[in-house]
Image (cartoon, rainbow over all chains, first blue to last red; front, side, top):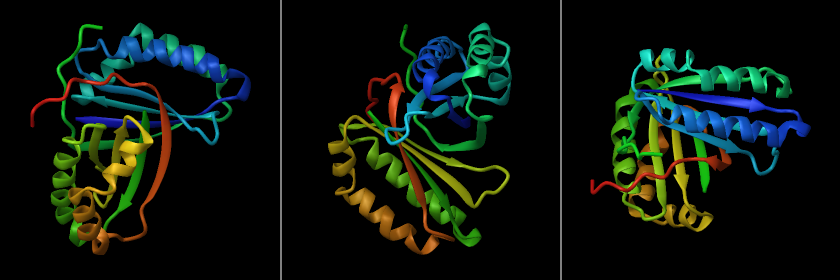
Length: 104
Length: 104
């Protein structure tokens, strides 16, 4: 399994817009067969700072995610919200319990 | 819900020791009623770099975690493995599906 931890810094006026777009991406991504987690996080101290925590079963599942409409819509929607380019680190999973998928 | 993302840099000779200690902490923490996630991640490019991704329901659950034997055992066991002090960022959860707990 592969985790991507994405750090996002948005413009103050786009905080709510970013939450709305990322919630839609969360809901779409969680329906992908190879997705394990898609958590959207926000800093309390600095609400313009967000983190996306994404886990996929394989690299193929990561690649597939990038082809989905919900990902592409999110990418294009949030592009003008960025205060600076986002950055990501990739990690391999050592321990992660994989839940049964709910039918949301 | 509250997420803590902990960055850990271990000495090369302690990579496997750290994995063993952190797996035990993962198993213990996942049994805590207020714990939602406890993922242990490792960098492929630099295997001395680990990330712990921890989610708890409330601040009280975070505080309780620090009182558990599995946490205190982990903290004391890994202390000599550190190549540098670990760092953490705290985030509030915007989107995170909470799975039913399995009986592991």
